[in-house]
Image (cartoon, rainbow over all chains, first blue to last red; front, side, top):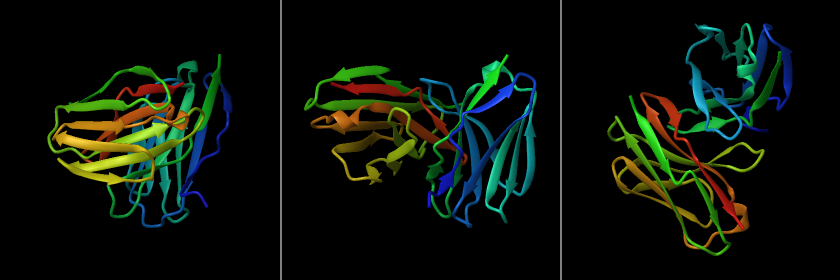
Length: 111
Length: 110
């Protein structure tokens, strides 16, 4: 079983729609959760971090965390073609300064 | 705010040649530093991390090595490159619990 799992996609949504990206993790003791956006050929960019159960909103982005279900998601409202990228979920495992990354979900937003 | 520099940006090297990639960080002191590799169409693989000068932890056995000669300098090396070493090499830095990536070095081994 992979430690951090994401659907590879592509997830296709029309411009203006809500994109929902999901991630599950296996270490129940994980404390910190992150979403990165990676454009083709570029390095990952941190867009959201979440540490406690519930929702965290930043502009058009909302991260949702449910530790009981070991599930973290990213919602992108009013999706734009510029949001087309691969989104990586990352989890910090208990007691370490290392992140475990999922393989990413490719998002395509069509005009 | 912190800035992570990596060079070179791109590199084409023949099999069997040596490698040296450099990462330097500005705007922070005593950071945790990381080297990742991302092969084409693959996920991020953690290669090495360092919590201080001279302290290196290796995540996977391979023909690569890392060194941290200064607080804000992290170097990735190889004595003899393999075809399988091709990929996108990323340096990352932890800042107050969040990890940020440098621009990366794209290495092609021919």
